Length: 289
Image (tube, rainbow, N blue to C red; front, side):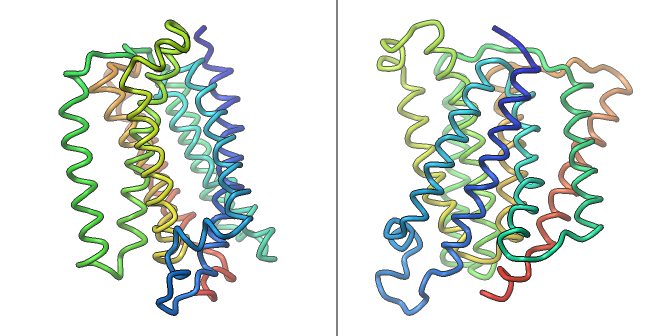
């Protein structure tokens, strides 16, 4: 059943849940010991922290809400709404760290909200084929994972000072693939049931992409301040999902002529406001680095 209203509501609930999990896991990351011991590994340190598991449980629930949203609407509806997780992250982080939001943060949060609303309401996305043939996936998988692999190596060995930013981009890209594969998996389950989940490759690719995304995200949180990694992953996910939604699934926005100018301006405003919000940072997180 297609219902953009229900898709938006569940995507908003997912964005709020994502924000909570992000704040929890980043607070763990900034406490990672840097003494070179095994415990200094971001992933090992996180696995040994009970609060990380609480954050991961929250992230899994957020993902469940996202899949429900994808069951009701298109990627082009759900993904812009999920960007609002950043807007929810800031007040939650401020609450945890004991400071008040600035006027500039409130302004950019308003700009982000308006931009997302324009893309969803004006765009009126049309559904494509959520379960396309494998040959339409192969180029996207090979090119995408090749680029992300190269970025991982660059972050680890060449541009180490920009590790948080680069790994944030990789994280967002991976979750962009997760979003598209989730849309395919939801469609398979609706039309083919549990047997379809077992027999189709998209489910296994989804598990691999989600696992890699979670691992890289923890490394990106540990690689620097939240305001370096968060804007990158927040923007990269919908951009990659948009591209894959268009090229692989065949989803489309219902806009023509001058309306594309407004859509482009909304996308630009979404990117700028996301970066502006993330760059504000939080006092406590800055001091811990």
